[in-house]
Length: 568
Image (cartoon, rainbow, N blue to C red; front, side, top):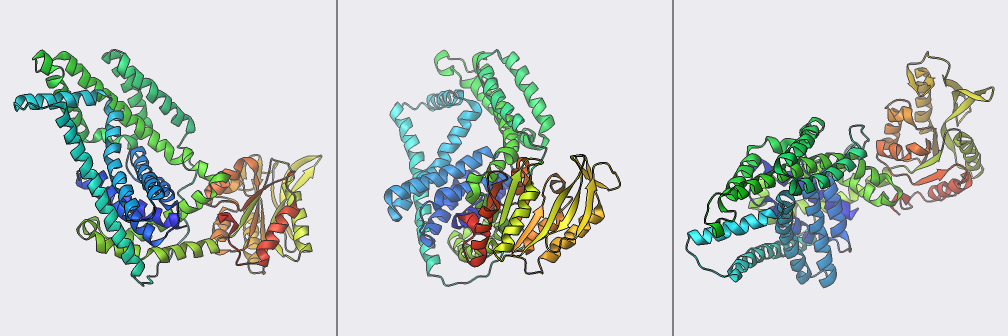
């Protein structure tokens, strides 16, 4: 949770100030963002002393950056994570002291320069290095300056020293601010408002197949631009660009910016003027022109490809993986960070004020961190435990729930909710009836042979009046001192926003009662994604027994103040 707080601050800083720098066309914006990020991390390290906060916070902040409106998010995301891991590494080696912070801060800010150089190399290739060398030699010749290779390295060392000094200054400021915040005795109220954002919903507009295709084509076309004649390579690359523009119209905004094309023209002219010009004596040659055009072609390819990959990464790979069982803590932390984003954006001062008065503004904003942490804790305490009972179609999920209900009653726990019993005819399932767990009252739900209802999924058509009745049963269950709420089942109908979708959204917001949902195995990840939760347990029919779940529910009921198992 503390990493979620730090990550939410960091992500807010990146989004707010990053957008400001982008709109103002501010030079060295990446370095400035790194400077403030180091201040933020060191300050938090003085407030909270746990190990591992830096790299966890960087991962959360990087994933928050994925909501940025920028066309390319890969660069900023990797840059944020690099800063966090460098800070973590040096503080781990040297300790949580001024030396460790200064070393980590210096390398984190220097990584902004290193990251920029790597980005340019990826964009234009190694020919960019050769072009800069030729330009440097040409400038020295025109100014009649005679120098050795060592002088060039002195210039490089000067740039590196400046970045290291700026990072060290940021660490020192962060150390001072952190100590200052620790001495403050403020209790600013900050509470979460509304449900967690629906940032992880599935969408058919994204495709893992397209993501893999872009990765393969990027590698292939990078080879093409370096080995095939420029004409043939251009035809292939522009065909790929055209397809990408049709699919990702919003992701190729860089191609609409005049500065991008001016940059390419400048590179072409410089390459034409200075490429091999020192040795040959010619200020314009065809090889330089072709090299410049080849670099531009590579830049267009990489820009469009990375834009397309960034779009695909927003949904299927980065987000779906968070619903897997091994990523529960990351998923919960990221949801908390997203939920606090609007509040922190209001709390943060305007970018101009941060630049003018960084110490006072950051100190004031960080004083809200403890109350935000308390809000996170309270929010999680209000969330119900949700257990999923899974199995394929016809595996016996409803029968399993009936056995669970009987076991719960034996232990003194009061179950409530709905069962969807199958109606059989000639060994074939012809429909369903809803049964109230509390009093056994039932109502026809839907049939395969009838089309009277307005709601359908698969071969079954369901009655709207039965759904309204079931919603009333579920809501009434909350006022009957219910210990466990059962919903049979949550599936395709609910994922379309029908069935129990509306009442589920309300239950997640209002009810602290533990819940048990029947869900088909293939829909487990989709259901968790649709309602932004991570199951406290997933029990498989035929493998796990109702008694296994009863013990967990009994332990939770016996101590309502027990830590939420989803955090364990």
